[in-house]
Each structure stands twice: as structure tokens, then as C-alpha cells.
Length: 393
Ligand code: ATP
Ligand code: MG
Image (cartoon, rainbow, N blue to C red):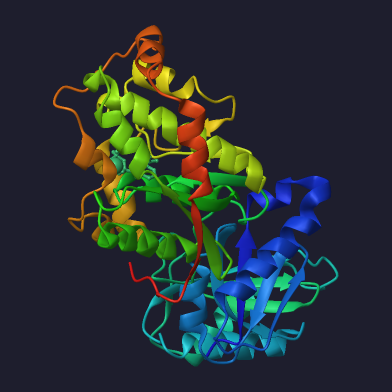
């Protein structure tokens, strides 16, 4: 029944000069998200984006619900700027709900329209009451709201505001390299970075044959789910060769520092790769105090290998909050598949919870760190992950 979908965006409109760039990016991401769906056109006018489609609106709305930057959408009828046309559309919208309490709520950003909002409310409300005897007005808690927006380009009538994800359009926030394990946390960290407009590439440390092909496939599947939120049809995933480093670390004279050393290697490799790829930050799924490697002392000792910003979007979240988000975004079921990751295979019996940087440096002195990093990077491969899997929350 609807002909057009109104798309509202929030923070973009605050961005002054960059506004039209942001709008164009959002439109580009929307058109990616709508790929394969039937619609006539996407256009923008006065702080709104419109998608014209005379059928299929449910599928379009579902796709829009996964595009960052959108605050809400409303499937609507569009009419010409005269009262007869507006009443006719109001009639059509209320036809399916002839026995509810209702309220007409008009807004008139277009001040050239000669009738003010109050009068529109009264005229349209009166007309509907006469047309449908089962209707009654309730201005405080109506079961149905009939919104009428009178704008320069036409009048829009709709019932609902459907929430979008908010955030900023992906692509407006620089690039970050996400350290993506097969666990619950790092995909959520990736999602939250995408939410703030960051273009994300993934980096996974694979320790074949200690970790299996299936554990790698799980990470690819997680990247694919994240791709559904990128506004692009694909995402790059780097698979770093971590086997030799793991083997070397097994010979450490300080086994309780192994996790710290392993994480430091990850950040070193990540930093080199990020610089090569033009990424300006690393992103991890750390949450303060969750495990031994995520105490403040550990984070300090691990972070010391890089001057690149390390974003930790989950830092203040409890595990349950992270799990809830993982469920919501559709990564949880994949994350809990049982395949081992490199940390579970190599975890020491008593990992240090408060490693001292000096001890860590002593422990690293037995290794040729640069050579290990170089080898891992030389054997790192890139996979292009596409979003062909559809996500159902
Ligand atoms: P996750 O659920 O994301 O695996 P976790 O609670 O298991 O997190 P750790 O295993 O301590 O925590 O890992 C902390 C962070 O280090 C991860 O969130 C991720 O960003 C990164 N990381 C760990 N293992 C890997 C890996 N094999 N490849 C890439 N990044 C990793
Ligand atoms: Mg993990």
C-alpha cells in the first residue's frame, strides 16, 4: 500500500560542511543494502532520503534496518499539496484500521502551504470521523497515530516510526584493522566500530595445524555476517600465519607470560599490516578484567609494542551485555561453535594477570622478534569475504 519510504538520519545533519558528503555516502550504502530489491529510485531533499517503491516495502525496510546512519524509517503515502489529496491518502491509510482510537499529528515545515497544522489536524480528523464510524479520537494515548508532514516536495502520511541502527555511515570514519578471533567478543567490537562509521578490515591469526581449517572457516563466516553491516558487498580479511610464533612461544622460559607475549606479537603484526593498508587504528574485543590478558596491567604491557591507537569498543561492557549484542547482530550462534582458537590451544596453566613490562622484555630477549614478525607477515594471505549470507536476527 505504501509508495515511498522516508529515511531519517541524525548525527549526519550536525556535520555542517561535510553534510552532503555524508548524505551521498549514506545513499551509496543504502543502495548497496538494497541490491537485488525492486525499487524505483533513491533521492534526497532537505535532510531526508526517500526511497520510492510501490511494492516490496517490507523487504526494503528490513534491509534499511541494517544500514548505519539511519535513525528511523517510515513507509508512507505521498500526495500533492492540497487538502483533498491529503484527505484521500488519510482515508486510504485508515481503511485498514477503522475501529481504533486515533490522533492526527500534522507538521508543516513548508510554510507556503496555506493551512496551519492545527487546522489540518481538525479537518483531516473530522473527515476521518465522518468516514469511519468506528473511529474515536484520543489525543493522549491513541492506538493509531496518523502523521502528516507537509514539505516542499509534497505531503507524506504515515503511521509508524521504525527504528534504525543509528550511528554514522560506514566509510566516513577512517579505516581500522579488527583483530578478529572466532570468539564472541571481537565480532561485536567490529560491529560497534562499523557503527561509528569506521571501514573495517579483519585480521585473524591462524595456527594451522594446531588450529583447524574449520576454525578458520568460522572466522570467515563471522566476517561475512559483519559484511552485512558495512554498506559494501565485501570486506577484506587477512589471515596471518601464526604457527611459527606459537611454536617459538612454547619454548619460552617464562610460560606464564605466554599470552602476553602472544598478544604483543599480534599487535606488532597488526600494526605493520595496518600501516601498509592505510588503517589508522587497531580494534580488539578486549573488555576490562574479563580474562588474564585483559587486566589493566596486561593491557599496559601488551599495548607497549605499538604507538598506533588500539580501539577497544567493549572495554566497559559485561560479558552478558556483549552476549546480548552478539545475539542481536547475529554473530552469537557462529561464535559459540566449538572449534578451538589459538589461545585455547596454547593457553598456559597459570597465565600472569599482572605482567610487568620489564619481565616481559626479559622474556622476549630470547627471540628474534623482528624475524618472527617478518615471517608471519610474509605468509599472511588476504581473503575477500562477500555478504552473500543473509542475516536473520
Ligand atoms: P574473543 O571472544 O573476541 O575471542 P576473548 O574474550 O576470547 O575475545 P581473548 O582470547 O583474550 O579474549 O582475545 C582478546 C582479543 O584479542 C580478541 O577480542 C581479539 O580482538 C584478539 N584476538 C585473540 N585471538 C585472536 C586471533 N586468533 N586472531 C585475531 N585476533 C585475536
Ligand atoms: Mg578469544
